[in-house]
Image (cartoon, rainbow, N blue to C red):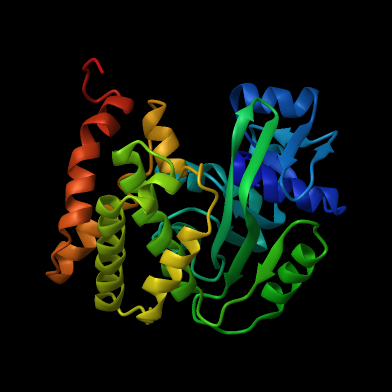
Length: 310
């Protein structure tokens, strides 16, 4: 697991709990806690403790592995691509679990197209304290597949591994790109708007004014997807809205939490990506443009590019 936060800690922990040999690539206080007291996961799907947890900051100390699951923030991907090279052998597969839709193509450019699958996960989880991952909502699921839609033995082997893990649903979509855009439709609309409103999803979806913005943001992403040649069905908008309506009312998006807590976020890979792609295709995206522009000062402050008092 390249990254041991809310995503990497949960899914990697479940695989280790099922008896798989899992190595966590982590850093800082979280790494130290994993090494000394193990990984503790508090989950609505069942708590567990992984002790010992195999954790290191040095991928070279692990060597080539069967699979690398990339669970870092999108802005950390360039560095992660460089550091993961000792993990990648001739038969290694790399599965990105990042938010956004660009990660597979970026990894394929760096590591070779034969190495990288498309992938995504669904979960609301975060590091609550060093060594502690808290899963608060959404039934955890993971999906992956060959970028060309082909069925392959390596995908089936990885699915079999995840099938043995408790508290994880696994899927191989017919078209992994469409599946990734379905998630992007959800996460980019929710995260940016909730960060701007500084409110949990229950508030954002219930106020008529913010609900209208949510619906329009979904329509904008859908238009961009179709322009990019992604066969995202029209029903995806209402299906995503229905999914959002079923989230825990106090739920917050990871990008929202990062911005509200003064950390660098995935703004560029979410609303920023929508705006950039829309400009390329000549599509108007006023909602995402407003969200991106409004959040940019706080984002750049978190990156230490500008300074001001809040």
